[in-house]
Image 1 (cartoon, rainbow, N blue to C red):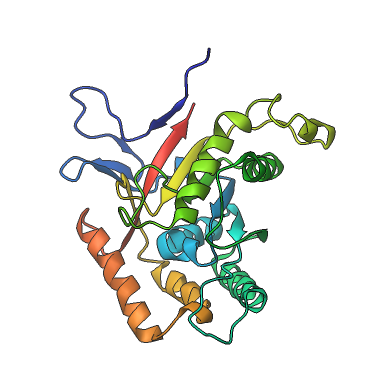
Image 2: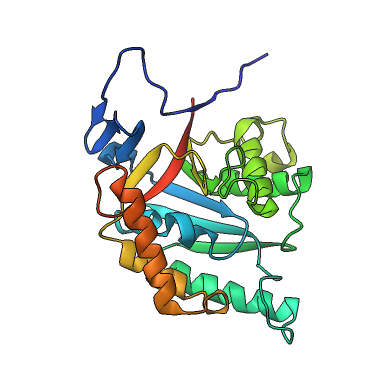
Length: 269
């Protein structure tokens, strides 16, 4: 039996105090990685999230930075967020159409190449084989070096993380290892020309235990602009902008940056 090959990339050798690779450094006092080295630049990135606007909340600035530097980024939303409204006159089908259009507008600002909605009902995304096959199919289609998804093991906020976030993250990690790699998992994909694929890393958003802080000073404004495209989910735009900037400031202060986003990195290999 082969052993599971996923591990946290923050593990270090005994006695190693600081690892430096370009602009990607180990911060000993904080116990996290900081920066974004040139060697980390992925050619293709696949973002798999539960709802429209999930990406913008936690990794919008990072995605904007990657796409500006030449990465091809694809976005898959498992739902269309069809329950996220307090308007009693709103219907699920109308809300889904609104939120899909908002997400496409936000994605264009971030430089995302494609946006796909899988059509699962908001609040009812499960961890079964149907969703796993859909995600494996996207992994084998886009063949990313990096997948960005939710942290299902240490989700944020603790205890009250949305179940769709937990389920999408868990199913995506299960799809990455071992299913997308193994030709006997969903062998019908071979008949469609979809070969097995090993993704190099998973970067987890909405994590209660992030171990990687990225400088987003140059792309924070774009992240906020993209989030404001989700007008159906926005009350006071000034308050939202201030809140996003305050969060980026608070994260950055932990590692000596002006503004940061924080993720959990998992390496497959």
